Length: 136
Image 1 (tube, rainbow, N blue to C red):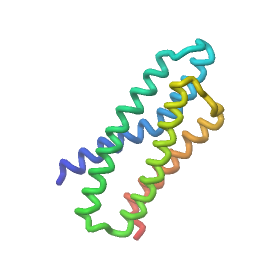
Image 2 (spheres, rainbow, N blue to C red):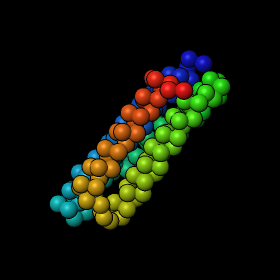
Image 3 (tube, helix red, strand yellow):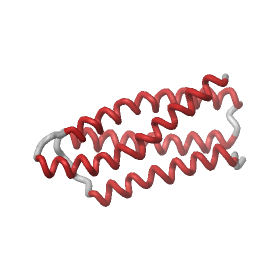
Image 4 (cartoon, one colour):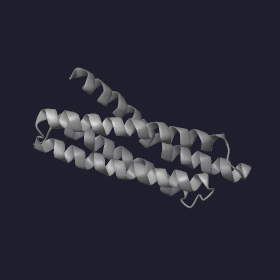
């Protein structure tokens, strides 16, 4: 059982890093694209980071569900899963932005991407709070 917790924590940390980093990388990728007029190394890095962390997200979700089952599905776990689902939606939206950026379509402004990036921070803090405090 301990190994599931360890794998879960490691994968969550990797996924959370990407949730914060990919929208920020999109900002710099957009600037690079405007400067070069073509797909550059930042685009490749952003795509690789997103793809790698997608695998971590799947493992984190699977091990999280396993741990929730082992805990007997207490009420706080339902809240945590709801918040994680919101983060997953944010991550999928980020993937759509990456796909559009790969095609050279940077529709979102730097300000939008910065705000979009910060929203995920609040989501991660909320999940952490639920796990530590276990409000119900």
